[in-house]
Amino acid sequence: MDARVIRLEPHPAQRGDAWWAAPLLTAIALVAFVAYAVWAALQNGNYYAAPYLSPFYSPCVAARCTHVSVPLVGAWWTLSPALLVLWVPGGFRASCYYYRKAYYRSLFRSPVACAVPDAARDYRGETRFPLVLQNVHRYFFYLTLPVLAFLWWDALRAFRFADGWGLGLGTLVLCANAALLTLYCLSCNSCRHACGGHLDSFHGAPIRSRAWKIVSRLNEKHREFGWVSLASVVLADFYVRLLSVGLLNDPRLF
Amino acid sequence: MLDAVREVQATQAGDLAVRWNCKAGKCGSCSAEVNGIPRLMCMTRLDGLPTGEPVTVGPMRSFPLIRDLVTDVSFNYEKAAGIPSFQPVPAGADGKRRMYQEDVERIQEFHRCIECFLCQNTCHVVRDHADLRPHYSGPRSFVRIAALEMHPLDAGDRLPLLKDGAGIGLCNVTKCCTEVCPEQIRITDNAIIPLKERVADRYYDPIAAFLRCFKRTP
Ligand code: SF4
Ligand code: SF4
Ligand code: FES
Image 1 (cartoon, each protein chain N blue to C red):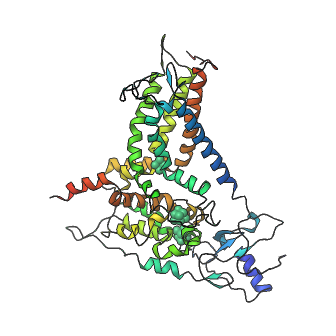
Image 2: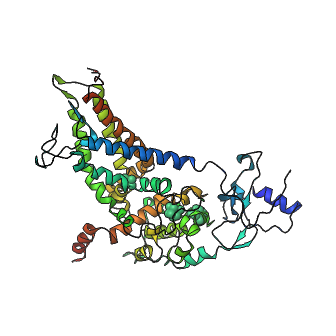
Image 3: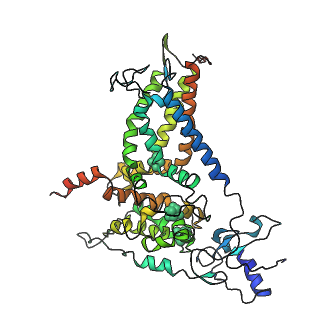
């Protein structure tokens, strides 16, 4: 063997591989998404192109909405109706165990990659305000379920055109988006806990055992569902926006 | 990698200190950092490392160095000693305790642990925040606690320990423990996050606390 031993004191080199690539890409993707979401939410327009409603504005609960889902808030609300609902899916993602990992690594650099020194000096993890609030993730999960139901309702409404039932490219976009968001929600760790993970014994709890097993399988792909559904939400909003401003015509498949 | 280190020990540096035992990734003795990445030396192939560059091998950084590649891993045993052990539930009417296959499967994963302590070494809370060590037990301990807490025949309650003494809130689920575990235990997803959810049930969920009030009334 051709080896030359050099004893380095007290410790040898840091990681020499491209450990910075993954957090860098993650940071770019997260910042880009938040920037787009804020921009889209503040537009207060071009979120409806019959029969499609952008997922950023669904359910549209203000009386002044271009397309009202349920009129919960009166005409006095003049700001963007997206602000009334977006905190729910936003809070769900922000407190999601996967996204926590993603932004603690890529934005907080705590740690940016494994075996690379933590950038945080006064680190206290999730034991203090505000990060201790991550523990409310389950509530965001519960609140997201009705929002998800509305997205499926929007997807169904997307089959209903002025001239009757049909199928446009937008219909497919909204259906795919609702399906991906459903996979993301069902694979949530709080969902896994609620539907069976809290039990010590599955014996005598066949339904919860079955549900836990299905959710556990989905949970293995939670990260993937997280990213794909993030992209699909942006794409769906962008598509509706292009239709609404007239830059694109929705191809009707039948 | 371990073969190379032993070759060096045999031919060039007879005083090189290195700990190893099974050479098959099952005893957890040869944990080290190869090119800065924590891993078992015996399970690291030299031909999997970049060629044409020096290979660095170092001891685990989180533990006090004894010599060369050997560290003092007592911290991990001290933390393990603080975990209340198995407390069996009362036996059934026939004097037996029964455990069902579906319940065995979930905790079996945790019993694969070979105590290599690579997860403890890599966890940034242990590695970079010495001031937190008295309040934090680390991923290996969480795996052990998960095996006990999810055991259908265990009557112990380690949630107060998890929240306070073991400091599960200090873990920020960044998954480095999972990344380095040579037994592919899904430490974060299957042990830590479910335990965090149980701690949330007990301490951070007002609705669950409210519902518990009714359960306790006979
Ligand atoms: S997931 Fe938690 S326990 Fe595992 S390395 Fe990260 S901070 Fe440590
Ligand atoms: S959980 Fe995995 S990495 Fe941690 S001590 Fe056990 S085998 Fe090693
Ligand atoms: S949505 Fe990711 S853990 Fe709940």
